[in-house]
Image (cartoon, rainbow, N blue to C red; front, top):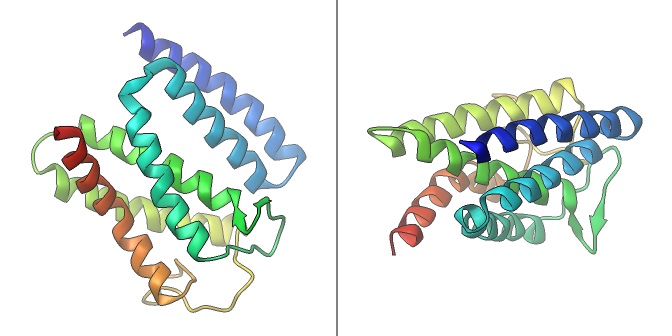
Length: 175
């Protein structure tokens, strides 16, 4: 319980600092700071419990961000040809998804898949239309839903990444 309380208080502090960064700079940079700080903080508090999840989530994120070059209409934080915003966002999102999954009961895979798709579409929609986080491309959206403006391969990755990540982490954590 002490660990959870420490995580809550430190998360509030991280949120305030990240919000300040976000207001001074680009929204994507503020989110990168927030997500990285939250991942580091969670690892610091929970150590090995989430270490494997973070590594696997990072590898998932690295697959898509190294295969497809993300270039946004506004500021890009690049490490070589890899954009840090989607790399860190995917890593954080998948680790968070796993933590939510572990708290669920009964028919967990169905519930987490639905949760993932709803969350993915909501985040994509808000990011694109409210926060103007848009790729510098003209790809059509997914099924005219206003989300995932990307090539077909990326759309497939986006839709499958969460459930596949959960299945792989389940398999690996059972060993």
